[in-house]
Image (tube, rainbow, N blue to C red):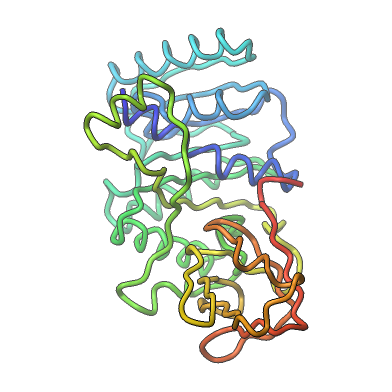
Length: 308
């Protein structure tokens, strides 16, 4: 129960970014395939996160898990007053025939597959998407699973199978996190769990201090998450040292710290100190070889990508 509820909350991040950019599929109801659905965490997250009418097809090898998923989704939709239908199909996620879809979601599925099976499964899902559709992939925040997701991202881009919408503002390959074997990108978001789930988290010390995961959103359309020049995705929390503040960012220019010396701190660049992991920062300063120096004349704009 705990993991299903906690995992369900993760899909709200990429879903919010798609909606914030105005590129969530236009069809109503939204045709959704939940591939490797299990007990329905991703579908539950969709019902909880959007009031868009949904027509969900949940696919998994475990018939009992699908029964739990269908009952849970119908119950939540009824209590929320949402227009949602769900059909289930017992099948292998790597080989199941996929109908046309506006949104495909995969929650902690790819880490169970080989590298070649991951790419093949993703490309089959992309082939099922409508032209304005999206594929949301959620994976554990562990280093190995996250780096596997970065590798998959690069393979999809290299093959021209899709465009990366999120979390990257960097549009091309390679992912700069792969250059150092100890680097990886993941989310660590504040979370408010439902009361009973929060009590379980407290007693068992399961994820009681944040929502950690890695994700990737792929689209056929080329609309990026951020169109502004100098758009950096913040991939860490600010840290203060004597006389300076730094925060790690990633963009078309690479993966490097944005550094603000205290002597250069003015109102126009104080947003760096308030940055959070996942923010998009528009920076009107050039990247150096190792960092971006934020000067007193640098203007920063911090943006929540889930908002228009």
